[in-house]
Image 1: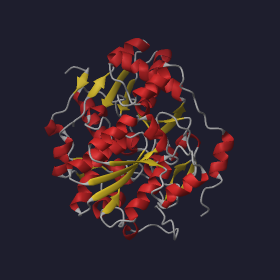
Image 2: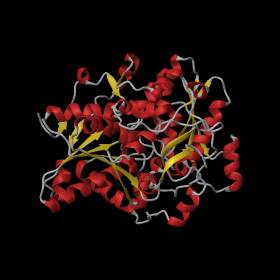
Image 3: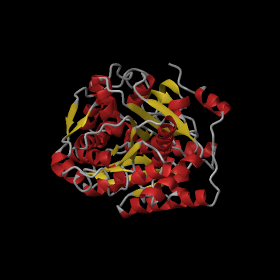
Length: 451
């Protein structure tokens, strides 16, 4: 079998998602009710989530069966290919072998459809007619718009304003699939109006957009809320990426030394890394798991490990995670999907307990590696995915310096064909790094809830 592209057949596609909660030595501390500060119950979540997803959120079963209706839609693009980046290796003059799992082949152009489809399915099954959600760079909004369209549901998307302006074609694509797209913060919710009152020029953030979407969903009986990252059930659905990758490596009798993915809320990283984390935790394999984030929003590398709200308005449960503070407003970097103040509790626990590592890079260096990859491999990567590419490039160069062989796997979570205005900014020399200053971070962390 050629190592250029390793393909699985439909029959080889996983039939169950992997739940890392079954194997973690230390589970994350439980989410807390924002009003009572006590562990939340299923009843607390029922107003905005279907029961089936609530059950997945707290499940300790190692395997969760994928419904046949979901598998039928998955087969539109899954299994996704595992590719060897021969030309990139040659350009770097490295002895390392570089592989990437390409999730940009999905109809949405990113990995987000892996969870959008089951979330829409479970909501439809329980009689929900409409879903409200948020989106940063737009990949999640596009994916959920497509999934709701597949199941005949309405969808309203609160899109972070800076991305709404930077990425108009993602907004257009959501509207093609029938979704209502609202720039956040908006005047349609009390949380949005509060932000605009304090700062009429607010660029928005995922934390703000989450507040608006949750408020929207809580106010209508026919509407539920859907989240594209962070929560346990979201990362569960994404593990199909890593499960497929393990099968593909087995076909060529190879196993990665390091597994890399960009990390905003955690679904991308968890999706490819959790099945390999199983091997590390249960079997003691030496694989390194590397989460990559922007220096402008360095949640894992500079954040506080403790309880915080998942949104700005304090409507969501308090999650035990790495956080920059729910009131933190990230700079308007072009990797909009990574502009989130918090992190998945499961990913946070992996990093905190030493099973995974985290690094942060400036956006100019990230775009440089993204352009190098495009010129070598022919795929224009999303700015978010370029963070993983940059880390893979650095690993390959380290292998060259050390004169050692190294097998590198990264998740190419989406293409960047709708991010070309951001590439224009880079190519014209107008892209600026936006580091997070310690004083700003300190001020944000001072606002963490006192428990």
